[in-house]
Image 1 (cartoon, rainbow, N blue to C red):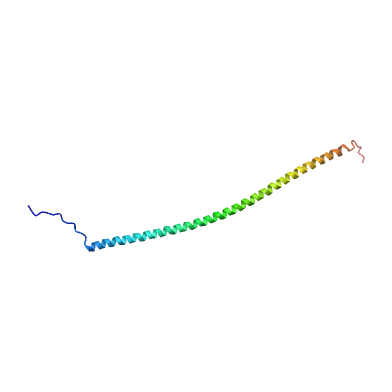
Image 2 (cartoon, rainbow, N blue to C red; image 1 turned 135 degrees about the vertical axis):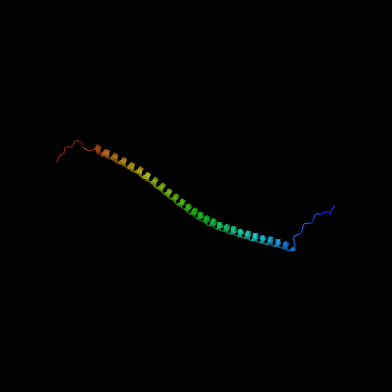
Length: 122
């Protein structure tokens, strides 16, 4: 037989190696934290920028809306004025037609009472 070979216990890392590995992990963790903070700050800045742009655009839209409302009111007022003028013109046209008819009747009366076949003397 020979001497029995017992399984050897795995060697644990020396305290120096262990602290080196822990240091690497800590540095990596800190680096990742800094990257995360930087990305968060960048996203936050972009969000603030977008929010400002949105507010600016919203203000412009509201201003344009106000202008459009005012213009619509002006157009409505002008439309009413035009309607009034057109109605007035129709009334005047009807009055003129009536006057024309009266004048034509008077002309007929005058023409009926005109002496006919008068001799042309010069």
